[in-house]
Amino acid sequence: MSLPLRRRRTLTGVAAVAVGTFALSACGGGVSDTDAGTGAASAAADFTPATSGEMTLYTWSDYFPEELAAAFEEETGIDLTVDYYDSNETLEAKLRASNGTGYDVVVPGDYMVQILRDSDLLLEIDATSLPNGANIKESFVDPYFDEGRMYTVPYLYGTTGYMYDSAKTDTELTSWADYFNAPASLGPVGTMNDQSEVINSALRATGGTTCTTDPDELQAAQDLLGEFKSQVSTISSEGILDRLAGGEESIAMIWNGAGMRARADLDTLVYVYPTEGLSLWQDNFAVPVGATNVDQALTFLNWMMEPENSAFAANFQRYGSGITGVEEFLDEEMATAPEMNLPEGYEGAQPVEPCTNEELTNYTQIWESFKG
Image (cartoon, rainbow, N blue to C red; front, side, top):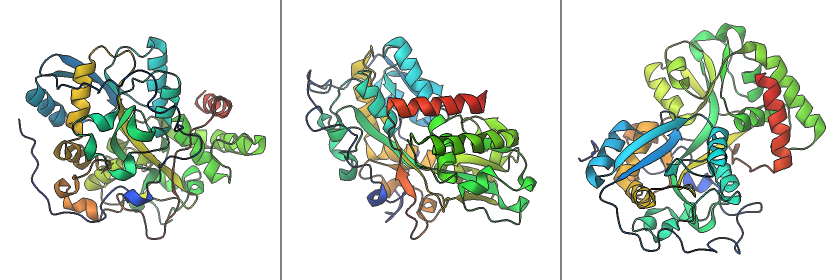
């Protein structure tokens, strides 16, 4: 089954954000040179593509096109089952409860890769040794959370901001402070079921720093969220696109690619790049340590590093890809869409910092208070 893709003109500079700006290179707090690639031989060492069997993909809601799943099944002979979750923390809890069993491929975000890896919940695969491993873009080979791509394959990347319907207000919203204190004419506010994103945004709005342990900064964020709670319509990472595009909500936290898709249905929607900054994230494919269909999982990872397959996902989701060669298959509108390109001079898009256990405990307390 060939994918419904046609060759596009090459798009120079197209991406959710320019790859050069996507600074997830190895840095302090990440995987060290001494512990990357050590231990047992990688799962991909003697890779032979599977031509039958089954596997289960556990991914974010609305994050893997059905057409792509069908094409994978037809081209490889592998039956693919797709299950869904709504946050990195939900994925983490599932893998911890099952000791890494139950799924063959999962899709953790950057900081969550490090958490799962350090908890021995991911299988070492050495992605660059797979036949299509050479297709990983150079700037994506050594991210802070997985130097050398020993545990992951890059999927899609983008930013987390918010959108509002400009037809419902005369006020231009430009900051996280505006989001948490939105004009009444926009109605109730949608926010994500994502502990890190919501609390980090509240910290930015109150002048704090992400992963802080400063009690004053944490209290300011908690107070802001406490005041904000009465304005909230939904705490959900699912269905955001549909709620905004359908007018059910006129302001909501959203990822940039979903924002572009929503604007296609309602052209008065505006994606905001907050003055205080926003999260620059990267999602990845990984194999849990307890996966039972490893050959099929590796076949899937290798297949998704084909430029046409990665481009199909990027076109559908409206995000950037970490795979070389996707540019000639990307839809032309992605080159100019405001959701896909950082405003000139904007330096606020920064990678999600992995918090320590102490810092995460503070976040959890604030989150439980907000949702309670």
